[in-house]
Amino acid sequence: MWNYVKEKLLAVLNLKPGLICSNFKFSIHPTRPGQIVLMGTNFLKLYDIHFQNKKIVESHLPLLPPKIEKDKQFLDHCWVVNPPNSILIVLNKGNRFFIFQNDQLKESDLIFDINSISKLEVPMFNPNIED
Image (cartoon, rainbow, N blue to C red; front, side):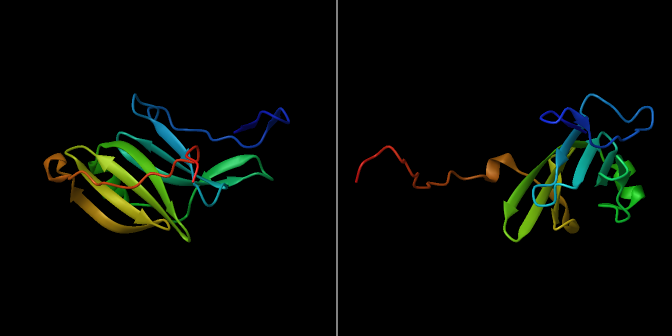
């Protein structure tokens, strides 16, 4: 992790060979910037950033048990913030997904059916329209 403004190294994470794959992704926790999520084909991990030691280490609380993690093929993830909650949605193969709320698994192996989505009409705010 690098601070471009100060041109300073903040932290380093040494990954095991083979973890970097074509769908490797990471994201910074939206409410706790001292944590990141790393995701690849068969792994989904939460890491803590220790800025004093310049290290990034795996969190002591796994998001998923290792057996479940290794059996899944993760495709993507995203964050939804609804204060005070932060929600992590993880999509895996077969249009199935996991929902984590505040780093705790809330729903698992949900099936996403694209045909069951209905269009939602939501009024949009336009700041350029004069009252």
